[in-house]
Picture 1 (cartoon, rainbow, N blue to C red):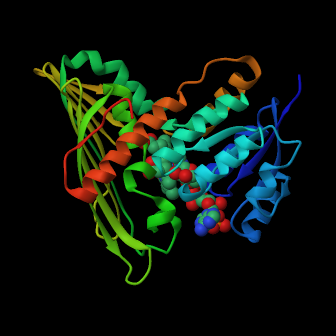
Picture 2 (picture 1 turned 180 degrees about the vertical axis):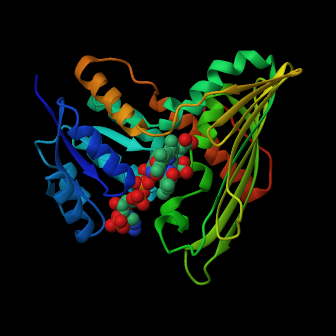
Length: 327
Ligand code: NAP
Ligand code: BLA
């Protein structure tokens, strides 16, 4: 069997996790990497004994490559994925597929026309928290309300892509897993409201903190609140997911899960968040070598991105925005 030759765009956390996973799997061979700075590319090449390339445009056109991992800043995902598909490569993108919904939507038919894989990583779905939540959803009766809060305080915020409006994108598109966890559990969304706020660094596109608060009204009547905040205005970190049903409540605080019912309070074990990029990489190679179906379809990621786009419109206009499934 031919080994799949792989190129990676990016040298950060996700890229390193991918490189480790590829090196540990005989079905693939890591060949090239490119990134944002020569020093980081060089370090990466030294660590993984591979070859550095100056630009992503050159990398995706290397004839010997079969598979490209897009592990760079959100702003560039769509352009790189598009060019890589045009060059007839299989493509894996760390979420989001693109920041712009229409740009992302065009990539699905492109992948199909090229007969190539387009996989958008959504490691949150294969993580312990989501699996535990799914497993226990039937224990709480009819769900009517969910609340998902992630707040990450950060002292001395540096000028990085994660605090830059264009490079990061709209917070709920950038942190797409927040919406995606909910659409995976509860299905289609009818309407969205949203407010966001930035604490800007004057005269730049950088900010030191942001807060984004959306409410999703699902077609089945469930209401869900999403709060996403990060930066130097926050002093207490939080990662809380609550689901309220008419027979019980599921509460996850960090990795600690609890089921509350009547007089009963039961602890729910949650598997750690480590190893998810490896799991995702293994499943990609299972698909490409043995046709084993992947755990998520690009359509599901695209739908979450559509809801994020509607949330962006809601916050820009202050209006309730409809999310209609056929546009
Ligand atoms: P990261 O560690 O900050 O790495 C970011 C990469 O982008 C680095 O190679 C960095 O290069 C490069 N970069 C920074 N500024 C750039 C610019 N202006 N132009 C071009 N490239 C630039 O971030 P990460 O956590 O790996 O995230 C990468 C992607 O994976 C993001 O889309 C993120 O949403 C997604 N993702 C990450 C995780 C996770 O657990 N980390 C999970 C799901 C999805 P330099 O260091 O040389 O600047
Ligand atoms: C998601 N983690 C992300 C994303 C970024 C980071 C940029 C994508 C955007 C988002 O959903 O917010 C970055 N995460 C970090 C950084 C740390 C971190 C810099 O925890 C610093 C410690 N990711 C990691 C580490 C783990 C990790 C160390 O960098 C866990 C051991 C897991 N990150 C992780 C998971 C997701 C994610 C599971 C998917 C999002 C989710 O679960 O909802």
